[in-house]
Length: 402
Figure (cartoon, rainbow, N blue to C red):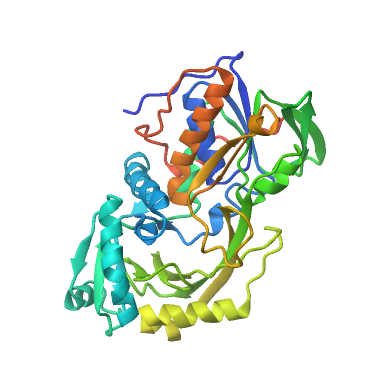
């Protein structure tokens, strides 16, 4: 039986989390296990931002093993933890990195070496072995490497963290938008909010306010007069009808457009492209990007070219760095916690970057920073604490604040 967290004392420090995506939910879970009072607000539906729009890949880290070792190590470590604490939430189907061309094969040795250096288990397959494992794979395949990728439901996995946080006393409010931060004497002391359900406005006071809004992090940070070096980087994904593969398929090369196919129930999701924008609310789905998903996906599985269209959409990644590049691919997928006390603004922390696979690790790091700020010595318990099933989220809805 999983041990319960202590209910927060009434005089426990209060943390306000802005952002109801996977990172915010994981942080609410982490902090409630440490005995803190937590309120989380989200301007839309929970997971309706970037969290609910990714292709549902549980990363092994292999995609980053050559050029982004930090992200690769984070992913393989969190991959193993998530399988333990969110049992039944993943299709543990593994993934194949597939070489189709001589250029892909030139990348092969670096890929294998990178995976070994990052601690990612691999199995090298011959062409015949790869085609037996995935019969629809391009018969021109020259080699393949099997890695511990997996498939997740982009909404249900994060809801386990929301459900467990709520069970342990967190207050979670959707459709509640932060319209300003309360700043007094060089410190953020809370937020002004607009409740889009009741049409009312009010204020929420807190000892620490956390900006967990992903690609919107810069917008929220500006309310406190500080900067967050975030680059919103959208990508287009294409879903076609038919489960065209059973493992996650990846092209054996550096990250590129349309080089991942993720099986999702009876669909196949091809992703993704990459560009950068100023405003993560101003996203489109460029036709040439959708066309590229068809073309590149068909190189891995020829049947993609004549599969029935289901949907195409875009989502903005929160990448850490400057806007020096124009695609976002050159930026790391790692994550970072920023204590804005270093910018002269106390009581305000930003957690950003990362991926859905690393949301628990992001929350642990941010929780450590928050506890240090509050003078609390309580380690994170989320590495071993088994979360409630996603269905538990719906059994006890929060009442709106009076």
